[in-house]
Image (cartoon, rainbow, N blue to C red; front, side, top):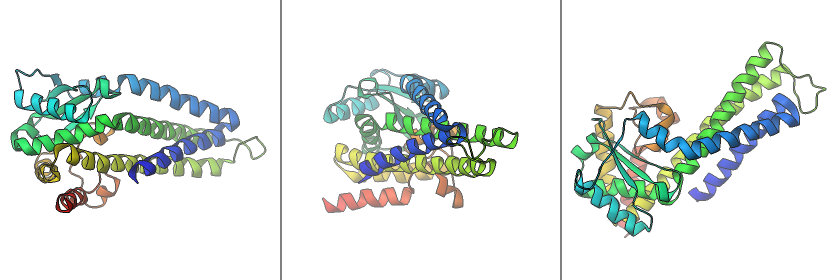
Length: 284
């Protein structure tokens, strides 16, 4: 169900991008918008992993440095039938982890020093299994494409409003054009819709990775226990210096969003994730 949902959300994002380009610049604008998205996707595909690792000063580690973590990653990657991902550590007290890499052959698992301190071996295995599931199902690529499309839509929408306000709007007689008001209204709608769709895609992939990770580790309660500790740990020590654009990569939202802000979270509600995992355990 989540796989189908992701597919249709991606299609909807592409439709919004092309429609916005068409309203701003007619048929040629639609082609330009699609070309921009294609270039941005290619750049993100090849370099996003290097960018995010550098952003958090992540350091590669060997088996000799962290044997327990290395062995967990190795064993789970073998069970998942994917190449052994590279292992990185981020010096940060906030407990979290993420996976990156453009495909399973270039996978990376990165964890903070904070998560290594608070989780048991079984709980850490549940977290790593979640990240291995992301790599196996190419979720990093999917989320990168979604973020790139949403970013392109927002960029074009901002430009469209600027052009409309300062005399750049097309007249109703132009092919594919619209008046200034329609451009402004649709550009606002497009940017907001793109943000909501990107969030929906991110949440769908998190549910899938939770389920896949629970099956891979062999016990859903390992991951549910880890999520409980991560939720409490991040509330006490959020990663406030994290870049919001990278938030979907982490297993848990690195910010301590509360109240209405949770509606715009890149992750599903932690309570719902834990409930689903516990339901999986009791159905076994």
